[in-house]
Image 1 (cartoon, rainbow over the protein chains, first blue to last red):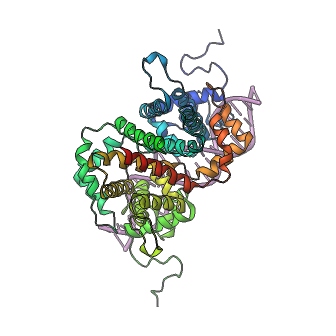
Image 2: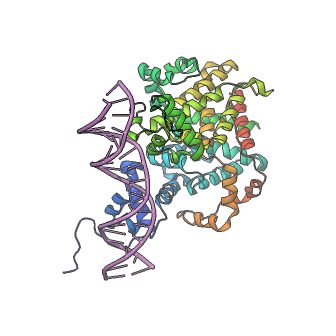
Image 3: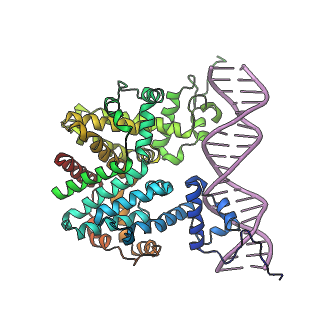
Length: 220
Length: 220
DNA sequence: ACCTGAACACCGTTCAAGT
DNA sequence: ACCTGAACACCGTTCAAGT
């Protein structure tokens, strides 16, 4: 009975990269990228910050490993969900849903270049294109545009809401306009399409872009 | 003669947002995003770090203003350079050349959502599409894909070099592969196209993606 | 109003010391 | 080998005090 552990923050087992990544993902889901700190993460695991360095190289390493782990879910199409869309289109839409559900993944995908999660995604896109009959010579360029579309959207996530807020709010909009020194200070296109922002759906916009790219690939 | 100033780091005039942004751009060009520090920037301007806050809101504000300033160059097609490419294609290629020349711009474009530089670019893309005869109803989606392509490439800049390094270096590649827990650990597409990386040109890849998108827009 | 620069509240990372 | 946690070397930002 001297061996009883405190009920809170029990250290049931030794540290491992897997346990650390798991705790990191929980922290990221709760508070986003900024919430992931070696001090808070160590506290969650009931240890000191230095202990983590025995299992992960550094913070970037940990973020990349966390992204790679949650990315695995987009590579398995869930058959229980009835009509899960197949092919590249389904893969891309699952990526969109992931970065919408977990915004920190979007931040991470666009922050680090060619991290494992991105390489993995690139490979799956290429594999799907191959299965779809895209000729070998065209696969590299086609997979690239699709990958860049996903990452571009990730880096500007919440496009509709943010655009609407920026363009609708006149004063904020004109403030940012004034910074453009060499320009006339007019945003003709943005003001013209501003009305479309009200009933805007980011998912549909992503899908529309996806279809444009797929049409361009099919034409090549 | 008591009024002589030291030759180095003279404070010829008062601080202003414009002078601060100019100094920030010089620092960014020399050392990248990480080199921009309020302490080093204040030293370059012969002042204290607190003084900068009278003219810029914070570091993100300063980075956004710096990006917006250098972005102005892509909105003017240089007529002295002979055959500067016109239209959306020329605009997009000038963006690519800018982020290649100044890597910190690439970092910044993909780091902050809908900052002035991105809004400005989005507007110009839409304006070019309008001039090109793309129907109004299709302009928003078309401009979006193009913008996301530019930002996606920006976030994964040096694609060719980095991919080549990753895939060619067997040991590093297998290390990152091992992290994929739920997967078989195979990257069939990447290994198959690895041979293409040797004579790879990032600019051509960007252009190929651009042409796929333009083909898709023309078809819609 | 603008500037100064010390001070505050954090970071990631290292490393002597323990087990 | 693994863990501990204090210490190091930085950050962005604030703010009393000066001009």
